[in-house]
Length: 161
Image (cartoon, rainbow, N blue to C red; front, side, top):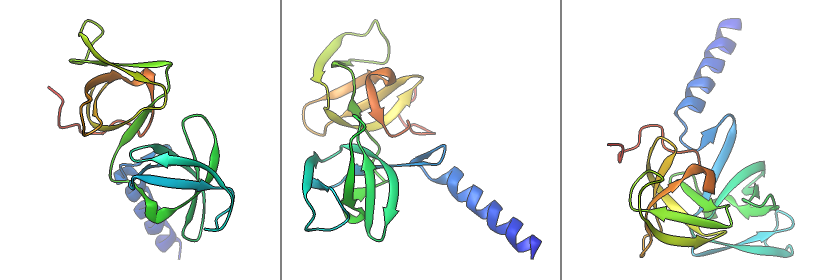
């Protein structure tokens, strides 16, 4: 019996280590639909608190059936259907007053975009504290991790040079 429990715990530890959307036991998701409504209760008829837009990162607070209680970058919480979220697309949201997108990783790199607080971005890789990000439209470049909130950076980024 003790051997089974030990094997189960080891398997759970391995799963947690391999899960890309977890950092210290926290689950992160991003919105996969164009628009998702955050609700007061885990019920499709519950009061709508606010909308979330594609690529917005959220932190899972708790689970109830097919619903996830999420927290956004400002600390606001509400319920979203789990099917409207994904853990496969790492994203961040500008938490600073202004997000500075640079041509490359580093303070000396030219600023090519200034983004408003709350702007959501996909994360494609990392180099040190710098994230390679884009919005799949016009915005593309590097931002310092201190300026954003969301998914932890990739463990083995493809854009590292």
